[in-house]
Image (tube, rainbow, N blue to C red; front, side, top):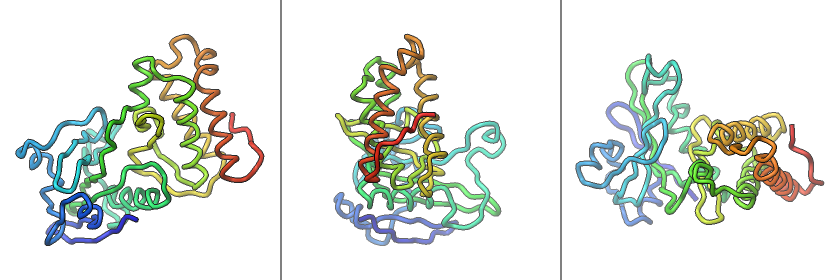
Length: 261
């Protein structure tokens, strides 16, 4: 079970899991060092490398509290040029890092395959704040996007993805950006990462289908339909949806329903 300990700083606050840090061999006397959220700190120690992809410029850490991923939150789209990494302050629990930490802790506690949260921070500056998150690194993982790009995504992989997404949906876990870059595989096990703006919601078909079609658009954009969309549907999408429907029905104890649009 993920525990959360709050620590105030000169310009904001940190929430972290002291148990996870201790279990990783990194006991933290006096709290969580704010420098541990600074990529430059780890680079100076030779303990950081840039992660593949990611709007926030994620960094892999070889830290005293275990191999982890540091992500600094950055805006995307047109507003990025204006605000960059600044977000409008409302209250601490609604900051991007704190919200994602709490959601990941809940999902991890339910046994869902998400990276365990280590710590989150916000730094307030007037009406704006900046935020960071550290999570456990999923070792040996490859993204679904990489498998598609390499032509290594098959019906078995697609079915595993569909079944895993169903487990999240059955519990009301809505991923705000379900795309192939945020689906990781280690062997046959599927993980979902990057739950920024994610939510726990009442399970209803409308947002569940929207999640699935976001994933479909991502796969098509990455070239999964290089042999045409009908071939993509037969080879990947139908196995994914069949496994999704089957797993959702198993969890709910209901007859298998159709989740196709």
